[in-house]
Length: 319
Image (cartoon, rainbow, N blue to C red; front, side):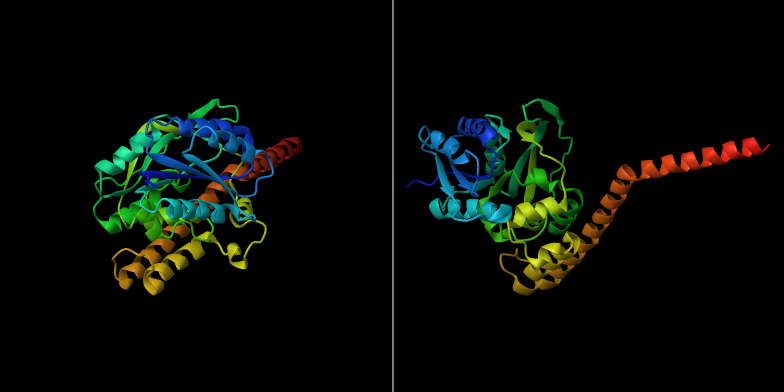
């Protein structure tokens, strides 16, 4: 079997209503040297029937269903594992959401970035937020890449401070770099951890053109992520705050085990882990302050206004 240049893993779970549109946008890409692997995490809707109807039309698409529910981390890892098993020589890999839409030139543009820049390990595009019915909700204004940053340390620091992992994770990776970084580890915010790890291996390239149309569902919360990441049975360590567990895991990977790490000394590995802990702690508490300002501060301000206005009325009545 000839190995394609690109493999795309599509983790499925209960998005049959939009899945047909997603598959059509992927199968009509102008870049055709690719294979699409849909891995179903035991969906209870019609996801299987939708995929199989497209498998009958296009042989580049295949379907596989897990024997048991793996959760988000397990299913995303399974997508990559199946791709490596079937096409070990595929140079690039991407995850595709089962409810988003993709511009016909999305893969072509991202492949061009990695082909033309061998120092890059990840290429991704700007995106447009859309509603459930496909109506535009505004462009994702985030812009970030590390093009031209040759210093590994500077690249790591820039990435740790500025990355938008939830967007970057849907880019196109070099398969070897992704394998070396550990794919998706069993940890909270695994996309953030993966992007930080893989930044040690090379540059990131962002295509400014809108090539991805993303459907956002609900509001992010760590409780919801624990449920989706780990499936029905959640390990005890899933309760450890991410800004503690991730630097610890990074330190273990780079300083102790050294599995898949880039060619850095263990001393530098300790430095990266400490730096990651420092930045993650600041970001965590900064976000907590912003949430407080947004959710609770207006209520306290209103109460203060009522209190002082009542005091003013009492004083005026006394006079």
